[in-house]
Length: 196
Image 1 (cartoon, rainbow, N blue to C red):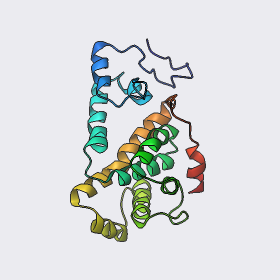
Image 2 (image 1 turned 90 degrees about the vertical axis):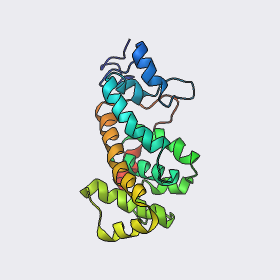
Image 3 (image 1 turned 135 degrees about the vertical axis):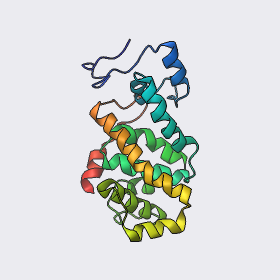
């Protein structure tokens, strides 16, 4: 059984609530909620198994096999979620960000204009890079040169792809109106985005 598009708990597209055996196999390889249930993003994607496999392949690389430091990865994802005004993405990664050691102040900096909230220099640089990648699909030469001094070529490749991947997911989540999972607090990322 699926939630229907006119069911407010299900958003615009159905969330799989009674997966087939094949869907269960796919969902078993995803990150569940604390209660063991699949998160709403995966309950949506499993409705198109081939798409889910490919989205999860890249997402899994970023989350489980990334060469980027976890703090950098989560800061980039939070900043992308704010830029895309995606409460679902922000709420999902807020706990992860705390878990990898981002302080409350550093998390706040992910949603503020560069330089307005005290943050370590490496995170300010990442904020600049994310803003440039999302606004122009490129990087200013000074930003690139500063990134090259702190990251390997492999890390830079990931860094250049990370905001785009999470912007793509944010577009899906926002357009499909996927509800924030019940175990997470809803966050008003729009206020932070308007401040930028």
